[in-house]
Image (spheres, rainbow, N blue to C red):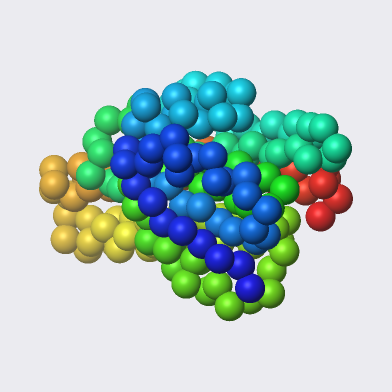
Length: 205
């Protein structure tokens, strides 16, 4: 069984960052709504510029540090689309940052995400630390695939309405926005998928 803690990033003090390296095995820490001060604490603690990686949002990324005495860490950055209320294309992607240590997994997102909470509810499984990471990645990708299918269904429904009832500006706008969102979703998924496949080959999962 793994344990988990859900914490607001901007409320986290240095005293809560340091215990992340405790010897308590199979613990997942989920931070949401991080701010610059949170990343400053995290950067200092792990001696990595995690804030630049998180806020860049250009492409998925993977980094492995073997560390001393085999006590290294894995950093995995995945991207996922924001809710569709975000109209500007360049602001349609959010970061999902995963940091795996020897005894813990850290997950960071901008907002409190339901798919993360749903994964955490299934905490009765006997999962090892590395299995937690792989299972969570699969859950995130399953959510993106489900979202893509819903968007495709909405587009088909709207296009059918246009064919049957004639075109309107409102319907065309909706279809355009949905297609833009679907493109973002597809590009994001492709970027994530390449990194995950590389990660699995590297770790021989």
